[in-house]
Image (cartoon, rainbow over the protein chains, first blue to last red):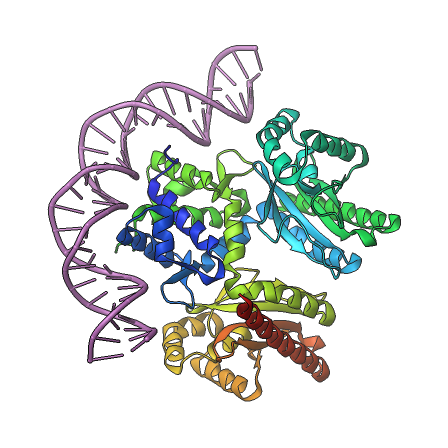
Length: 259
Length: 259
DNA sequence: CGACAACTTCTCAATAAGTGAGACGAATTT
DNA sequence: AAATTCGTCTCACTTATTGAGAAGTTGTCG
């Protein structure tokens, strides 16, 4: 089954993925050869090219390669679609400082939700995503719900069908659970962390970020310790998140209007 | 003059750069064709490949492409060499919250200093780098000084020779200025923002992050409003940064030791 | 709702580009 | 100083990529 596009491209990307998989110690030539089936000279040729473009670099260990800083530059831009990330950053920070919980910005990426930005508060929490760039299948987590709720019903169904097996086996979430939470969001304007999930000691909230025509640009989400979830605190957090989402859209709109 | 490595690779990277250059509105097929000289089908083939790998995506506007979220994932890793970024993140946050100024993590990237992480405080400041991924030539800014000071003298000289013309013309910094600041750092253990720079209303400090054998892993840097720079505040900030740098190395070391 | 205009993919022969085997040079380590 | 690991080079080969143009899609506007 041929990959779309030139194979050199696909191979180069494989090399990047392999490098990423090897983490901070870097990948060696054998990792690349085993991982791709390329001959040594070819692997080196590609490595050389990637290095010269700044996509790979030589780490502290000889013969091992690390991801290059050009990826950092591009990655920073990639996460800033519509300028959403820049808008969210200071607001997430202020939420985290003021309320102590951890706050996230999510966007949709095909059948996944991708985390564009995190700001942890002073109370440590866990989450399905480890950090910026983390992805979960749509349906997992409160942010996913907020992202899915405003898609076309047909599209939503397609996505759920495509991933419900994985949702069930990896996260013990049924399609019906997801539908129920979406209904909850439509009724109350926010999404809760799903009960019985794999992170029992945390709760969560999420609100969608909708543009003026009702399309979802992203979602703000937070995760908080169950022990801190009094009614008042929840209400406070929710209010603050709604305000933040509203302000972001307003500011985005005025920015677009200016140019 | 031929680029090293397969040309397909180079072209693909060009497409990414072009996409990045077009910002959040995305790049269209004409941008790509004009920018690379490729024929239309070829450009589309590459685009398809890049999209299928998650390096590009279709934005809100038809016929325009944006950087894909896979870059976000790789970028997040790329900035985390030796796990430095993960170590720095919470510390930068706490510094920013506690002291109100803006703090940065830098690493060396060839002849540049690259910003791996930013945490802004409540007092707004400007900086040479706009955000994560930003680069300045080594020599510009206090973080650069901290990074250069612990290189081999020969290497330092090579770098300075290579970039002194640009330093002079773009930033009005002479090689001697840089040497002086490096001497200052060796004497006092920290680097100051260079006087007479292009950002007169801000001051800065930077401390190196050195591993146990004295090699520079990176630098912590801060930028603060001149109006806030009393002697006591400077001393407080400097102390806090030194502590943070020391703690990071200690924690990194214990992490490495564990595996 | 139907025609238009855009973006995108396909076909096919020509050719330029990437490929692999192995030898060679360079940089470290023991 | 010898040995090992890492990176590059040469060269014949052949396969994957290319470009021109046409056909197909998809969204838009009258």
